[in-house]
Image 1 (cartoon, helix red, strand yellow):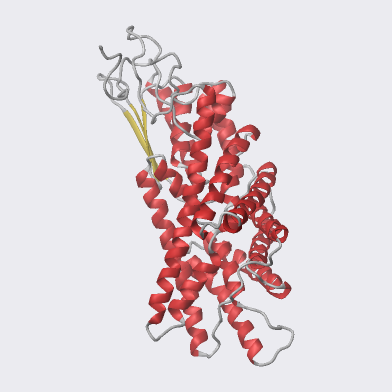
Image 2: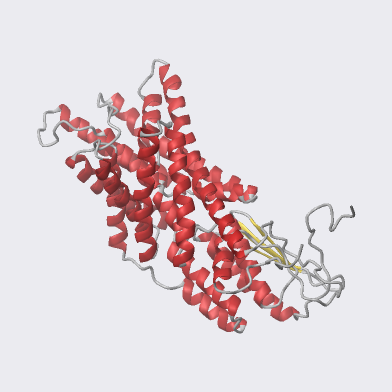
Length: 494
């Protein structure tokens, strides 16, 4: 009846110095820090950043390394023993963009270095080449992709040919304006305000044209222009990243990502509210369309969903393979949503979460086979499911009901939209997590949090030690390449 091990999980401890001199250790830590900052700046989750740093440091012989990742900084501490000063470095993440091509190239470089650790100077040159490489798509193509995303969203919520064309043109203008504002150093909150105000102003002009009898406009619903524009703005929010960080235990980073989503969503609400209020004062109110889908033809809906997913994948600079997989995943997700709502009679939040779970599960498995970023696929595939029309409806109810009923009507609608967004994020994260568990089980790896320090696995203090694995895409790619995952536990160890 004696216990075979400690009553708690293995606690990381320091055993013996690893013999790396301070000059080499500083160079390795600097390289690992730059790689970690680049990954979090291009959209990677905190677990992937931690795995990156631990993989590089372990490949160059640094065993007792601790990593702390927040949304705005990365800190690495190298414990050199009781008789030597530790090396602790922190770098600030100054900007964040969705650039999945660079993210995939970085992952590939980390896997190569983990298999064949070249001299640090050469590794730094290869790293700089990845960071400074040009984008795979020209600027005009990315602008057109933004317009195609909004046009697909307009068709998905019931827009006719005129509204689809108008949404396309409006979104291209929004994309160029946002790019200019970002380059001018305008804060993201105010950029979101301007971006949301543009489609609302265009919709107000359509109402004004209809009021003076312009026949070329026809009997259309201008609110769909605003709804499609909101989908374009919501697609850039890191809802999925926030949920993944929360499920993986990085609560500080998850809280920062979540608060950023709230602030940027508030910017969208402010931009729409200002223009709607002006329209109300000028007697040009924008009526909310009762249409929610293009038609009862699921095939047409799936085509729109595929267009939206492909367009966002191009917007986020995903590779060609990732763009194709994202389009397929977006179509599959919409089919699952339609089946859940029409056949299983599930609610909107539950059906959306189910579709997102299927997307996350399948995308992680397929992305591992094709060595592409699962985050790029899942983020693009859930864009058709974003509650753009519901968010606009709630904002419109708050603004256009001055008698006091606006608050009672608008807040529950906005809460439903928020719940749907949380359902999407949770579904994707759970699907990704279940797929990771399946992969880990097939590889025989025991999953536990990253230790970040050495563990004695042999009575001999000089024996090779090991740490616990990080559950991330990078560790799966490394394991696939027949390399030890960052901090992998010996499979013979109890």
